[in-house]
Length: 88
Image (cartoon, rainbow, N blue to C red; front, side, top):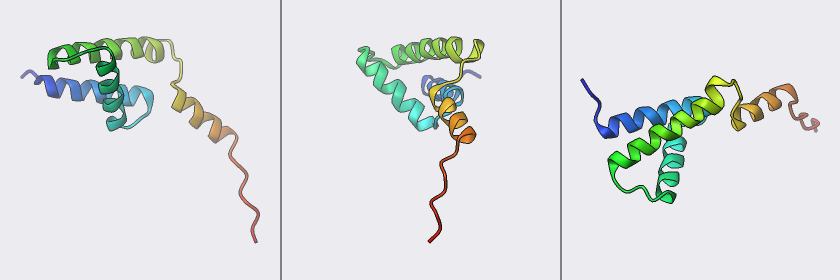
């Protein structure tokens, strides 16, 4: 059974969210904003755009092992936690 265009777009958003360590809603907003800036109008064009974005992000972060910015921030925070405020 094939997914609808909307379902396929949601799956791509979820995969991008997982790859970038962000929420699904944030991934969808990011894709929607980038698609609008690129002048994408139809649902089919938006799906193709999302697939291209996913492929680009997989190449950048998935295959080469580079960590996305939020993951790098989390790693740094875990390694160097902020000192606790002194107790009163």
